[in-house]
Length: 350
Ligand code: 13P
Ligand code: SF4
Image (cartoon, rainbow, N blue to C red; front, side):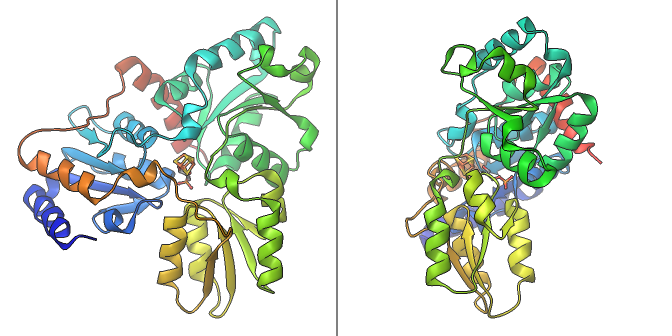
């Protein structure tokens, strides 16, 4: 990265001292991650944001829904800053509150809402988390999805899972022993979700039709191809990947799980990793004694995560030094309160 910008970022951070706390998601660029006080997956970052009450400014190097969660979990006088407001998440954008409420009204007409526990993946907007909170549900991340579903099936007999169909299906089928037929796909762009009343009454998992465009690019062919090319390779993927890809893989887990699995892997072993490329590259560099490669031949960054680059970080930090507070992410009080109920429920999972 540009040495001038590195020096400016360092100077601005030093000038701000403990007033600023920089959080970095594992998918961030190297040039940004070097300035993170803490790195983590979305679950760890949510916990870390809450653990720094003395920091006036939380600079969130990640995407919009993560910054919203940080705002919900931190104190009123703490401000959360997203260095580029265009850093959204296409998956989170696939569930819009109005659509979700329309679906819920339909479930109400069918008389099944008493049995349904809504569960939303962390990768959703604050108002979706608020919807889940006011309907006695829970937030989950890729590292606690099974625990969240176990809890939900103690509260009811059905789960309405938002917005990532793959995480929902993979957890239910591969970790909880459900049949694929127990899951139905609710398409918000079709009347009644494209489902019959009977399908909705019978389903145990009602999956929202959302997905991650980055992890969705790995296919069964990517797995077959790497197994042919690298004999003995271990295939390790994120649960946002398609069901058939996760099924064909050897290991599946969140970004924190992937990091730990590769740390623990024996020297000389080979790994094809199906997750975002910034993280895979960093892991390959960190473990030169192991052969760590990207699962697909195509390059696959999360373009919105990548929007946070060093120039944006320097700009945000220097604005703070100058006494201005740019790109503040705030969730309105009512939404924040309801979303917090669902987030606290997650943090309290056994
Ligand atoms: P985790 O950080 O929970 O593994 O999620 C991955 C992701 O896609 C974040 O956007
Ligand atoms: Fe969203 Fe996928 Fe990017 Fe994660 S990797 S921020 S789920 S688009």
